[in-house]
Length: 497
Ligand code: GLU
Image (cartoon, rainbow, N blue to C red; front, side):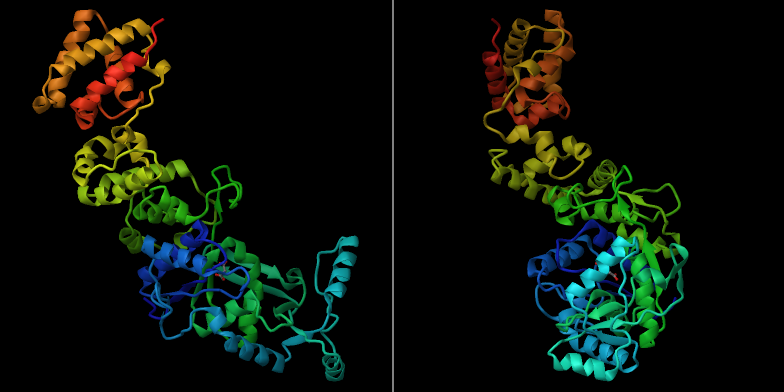
């Protein structure tokens, strides 16, 4: 494979790690691993007002958590940088942008523009009135050196605009095939450096990709319209164009665009809800790619062995939470016991800290529960939905749910009292599922009740829920004393009047 494949992810630390960024990072990582290439992480931190350390940490930590590790880039936990093209954050590369800008000005491929915001606004309004798309009119494109000097003497500082040449810019996108865009659609000569000297995205991204020897630009489809600008800049600065692969946008299940407002887009939220890194990686990889078989549960390693950029689909990748939960459940089933216990405990502790449960069970208790819960967990946090009733002191029982459909309140009271008596005869030492079931079945038979009705009343009385893991295993996990106490309490609280 080509040894000089170099790809990058270039997040801006202006928000938490977004699922779109994680997916793009993953595809870059997979491509690098598959081809033996190098994956670079670079921070686009030139938006100083909106960039924060906390967002930067969230992004780097989130990617590390997902196992999407970079070969070159900022290290986590310290300000150190690794890699031959350091620094990997743009605010530390301003000299590079200044040098590249000077080169473009020297070649007359860029020029200072002194237009004021008012002038630009008036142009925009004129264009709007004439139903024309907004574009820079070129007022400063043809200033003579003397005219420029006059403006500078007035104390004006020019922004730098790049000269957009007429014609069509095209590229063979690895994902989208041939794309051609007429440069008349680019809005005229565009600003690459503001009057205050800060360089803008289209410019910095190209200068960095050149400096870091990027061979393949793999990023979201939302950047397709930016690519002609980047190609013009690569050409102007004399760098061979990298290959471009634009990944399909991630959509909601109904095909609409994801938005931070309507959709859950922060990776941290998925982590907090108890999705496994294995499931998220697996799911993100399938947002635009598939192995071409019917396998759907694949590890990062397995995916890295099969990943082909050419197999990425053009079509919208839909983010379906139900499907993610299903996949997460599959991965939860695959974890070994110790691993699953260790991953569950923090969620149980968090529920206790939030006051949802009164006690944190021991590691051993959680391990003993695994056969009951493993197949029932869509997420790690769901552990308290499934068996949180084991760890509460005052169980809330809805009287309406307590009375089985075919029973009335009086029968239910009677049934619970009889069940309590029957179970009370079983000792602590023989409190096992096999010991609990036969006497309760015999009780139902004697009294002419359907066993299912009796069991449902017991289930709701002892757990507060109509759906639980198997009843007798559940009563064993709950323990003899709590079971008997809950049966008594539920019976007492049931008004038969
Ligand atoms: N900071 C840009 C983004 O996150 C990078 C785009 C690019 O890859 O060129 O969208």
